[in-house]
Image (tube, rainbow over all chains, first blue to last red; front, side):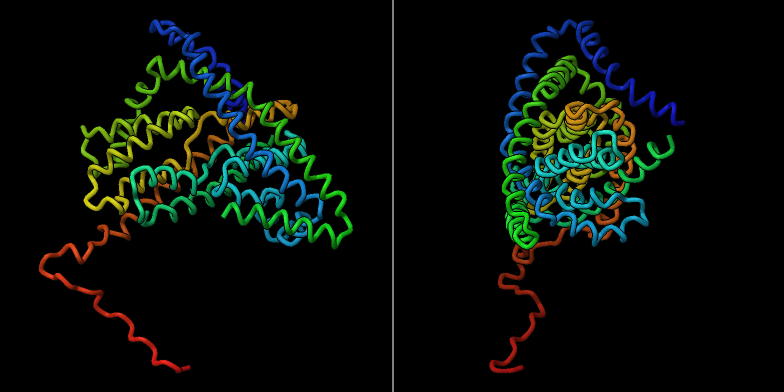
Length: 179
Length: 221
């Protein structure tokens, strides 16, 4: 089982990288030109998150340096340890639904602090990768068509975010702790 | 809300820093954090450029349409109140396929187009329909196969296996998407039909909400 999971993790990306241009070439798509077109969007995305990352990283670094983060974590730690949740990732549960770039900055900070291959960093990466910014999605999608009464949509989004948070911890615990 | 959290973090840091006698370190951390923000963003350029280029090839080659066809039977069940041949269905399918491939930038415009098509089926244009809520639930849960950005950051910080989070992310995303669908169904069932607007009923031109609370007498309490 574990061997299979590692195999999936290792092979998914190289296979996609080889398969996509090959398939497109067989369908007579000018692959290089398509690549360049899309790549330009990638550059813009990367540049457009600079202000978000700078803003959030500044606040998080200050928060850490002042000792405030430690104080909060020491209060929450006993509550979460029973569930196997590393308390360092808890602020992410609050940030993730509200701000995509902000939570990305928080995850980056954890990776920097604890190393990319630590359990904390793996859990944080999984949370960041497996959920989306609920408030942003709601604003953009409903805003675009002029919906003002979103009924139960926000509740559904937030409940599934919470479940996603614990699911990410569970998945990492299952897949990494046993290796 | 983000405004308050951000401002709160900064103000609390300064206050707590002063109490702990760490004010110098707090100021240092501000500039250090800003620098990390820029370094990380620049580090992301390579992988985002590469990945979005690759995904554009997938889009141009019609892989999204292929995936859409594969998913049609599932999606029809998720959106029982959207007619099969309605254009909304096509956009919903492309939106979900693009999400699956981690194509955030392509998924959003398709999702918006899907919403616009669903709006044509909406009797009350300012109130979300159940189908709209389901589409939103699927998008907030974000079904992902390749968490590109996270792999990029892990690579940046010298991870031994940057892509090892693919499997747990997939597992977590399946659970959270499943949960989103179940919770959405439950609320859809509980909410029933969207509330009717009483003023649209021509037989009741001046109808008011039936039982409004009487005002408390002044000076009471």
